[in-house]
Amino acid sequence: MRLMISILGLWLSAQAVAQGPETITLVRFDQVAVTQQQVASATVESLNQARVAAEINARVIDVPVRVGELVRAGQALVRLDASEFELMVRAAQARLDVTEAGLDMARLRAERARRLAPDQFVSDDELLVAETRLSQAQAERAAARVELDRAELMRSRTSITSPYDAVVQARLIGAGALAAPGTPLLELVAIAPLEVSSGIAGPLVEGLTRSAEIEFFDGERHYPLRLLRVSPLVSPGARQREARFEFTGTPPAPGTQGSVIWTDPRTVLPADFVVLRGDELGVLFVESDRASASTADVRWLPLPQADAGRPVRIEMPADRLLVDEGRRRVQPGQVVEVRAGDI
Image (cartoon, rainbow, N blue to C red; front, side):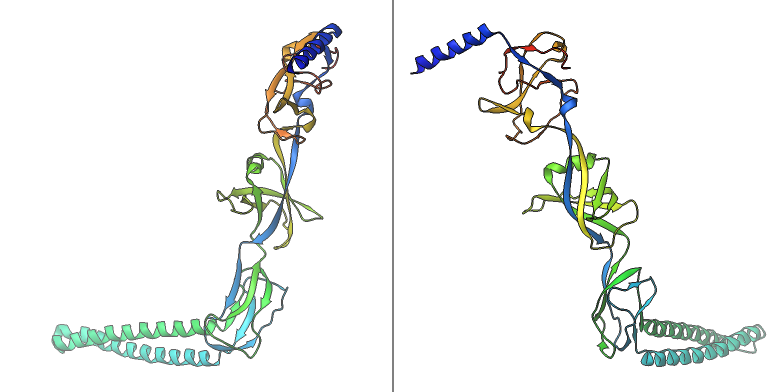
């Protein structure tokens, strides 16, 4: 049986020789190579999201903002009962006044003792007592000043303001409730700065980093982006790396879902030019200097990274001549006739 097949193969080869070389056409690699547009799902995220909490024990008097409302930095969000803290401030102010009066008296006595000491009208011990009392009065006044500052700080915490321009995402407390230190009051999402987060498959990362134009698309509008960084960590399940982008123009709202779109500048050979010979996928070509000749030898470039029926990423000289018409029939090493005028 094998002998019969061998004889048949020799006969077919002889017939091919008798009929003359196969006629093919050629095409330059840069005429058929394409770049691919890539897409990955993405989300617009705010870099500042916070649960605003109480720092003191006090009853909630008013929450003047509503969910979804835009608030500006410094705008009042929650007002707490300040009655107790007003009393603390008044008491601290009174203590400060007392210490200032004592300080004035101690300063006068010390100055008088210094004037009289040279003439021996006061003893050295009396001068020392006056100087010591002055130092004590100064320390008492400083302590009273600190106590007043603390009381005023506690009072200031009865008015809770927004730390930045933000949107109120949730109200977690209402008027009449008793707040304690750490009690969450509101959830805020800052409107800036924003970043876009997207999971990028490992093989696409290089093309993303080399891409000259990247956009975020929310289904209606395109927003230009700039790549900031790509995490070196790979997610175990999706086998993706997180990429972070920033907007170069006016951004959409935080939380917007969409896609990151970019063009991979690395060239791709269309699937039609990937052919199977034996058990190997590859591409058929002839040397560029044979383009003007009437015949040429077909060469073979294996593509181990290729999948049947799918485009394959490949780098080769722009003027490399690929077998176009006839690539399904010719074999590596075969002498073929090149149709004139195709290049």
